[in-house]
Amino acid sequence: MDLHLKDKIVVVTGAAGIKGSIGETIVQSLASEGAIPVIVCRNDRGFGYEKELQAKGIDALFVKTDLTFPEQIEAAVKVIIEKYGRIDVLINNVGVNDGAGLEASIEDFMWSLKLNLVSFFAMTKYCLPYIKKSKGNILNIGSKVSMTGQGGTSGYAASKGGVLGLTREWAVDLIKDKIRVNALIISESWTPAYETWIKTLENGEEKLKSIVKKIPLENRMTTPEEIADACLFTISEKSSHTTGQYIIVDGGYVHLDRSLLTE
Figure 1: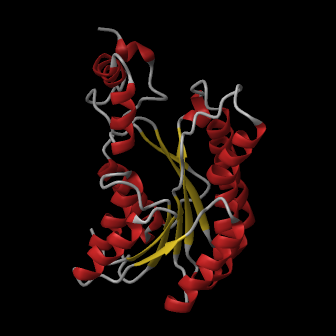
Figure 2: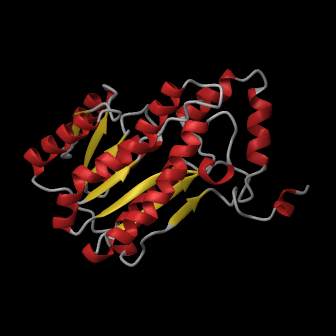
């Protein structure tokens, strides 16, 4: 299926994670569809990803940016416009489940909000004039934590709840501009960060098996590739009448009847 993403300028925040992370996988999938991925992230891996893509003849850009600083976000957007002159799609992907719980300092809680929520607002604010010109769209990456809670991560949960609120607020705001705004919600996905977390647990293998058993569809985790596929479909013209939606790619983990889990 041709998603008509060729030569589209697609900005992806937080996409310089380890190989196989969700952001990096989205970037690779965009490149395979002929889109021009722009990575906005603070991690220097982005320089390597930019070179790797360019060596394959793929136009790509990395703009090193600390997303907790709105002034750096504003500067990053200026760099993108100086090179390409337009922005077609914004994927607000950055997210760190940082464990800023009730015992955390106010400063730690505020930092979590800055990274996981305020950056979404700032990126959208500064990209929006160009998205309006291109009649593009916005996709926010969310988390099941905003719907289920998790414990011990107040900052992340509050941020991701805010992301869902902003998704529908912006969908309403931008109806007149014919700009679609959606959120894609992730539950249990086997990423390098998830694997690292499992390895920190004393009973990691048992914990992993317990989680996987609770995923109704095929008793397996969602792959980053499946998430990337859903992202690309949602930002494409194939989803031209979809806006204000929470698209949940999780094998039924959050919503299906718990009776499915009975052995």
